Length: 234
Image (cartoon, rainbow, N blue to C red; front, side, top):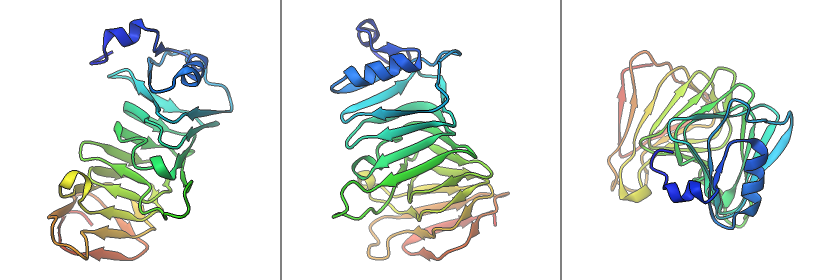
């Protein structure tokens, strides 16, 4: 399984069906369930899959995985989330506030399907949420036509597609002390607003690129400060 240690697989962490995954997640106190999706993975028509605290799912390197319609994934507080080369969400995902920026950080490519729902529940209302999902520099998220990415997004990678982003989209450095260098492409509609750069600091040389052929529609406010915008699209 790629770079995963053989001792982990020999120790029984590898799972290939839905029920095996449920059982392994309930057994683990920490660490990952190593998932090798099979053609007969055995998704039920409707179910809720909970990823507990301190536990995560690692999908075999080179394999894509889909959360189908009818399946809800609940990310518990301080869970390790999902690591996957390509993850398609056609079901429902509920993030806890305390884990919101981390749950899909280990995914290279995330696709939000037309039936997918992505939400963030504030499990600590004393500290209001600032962003709901973090897209790292090496990751690409695609919102398909008819789909909506609901939470706010901190973008340091690529966001593309033909769907809608209803949460605020923020392109500003800070994670790891580095500048943001994000790309917006496709035919996205941004209804929650766009912020590029930090209005109170010029520490980060943030950068946003809209490549040729892209048509980005803004239905809310836009703030650009202490940043460079490379606009080759529309």
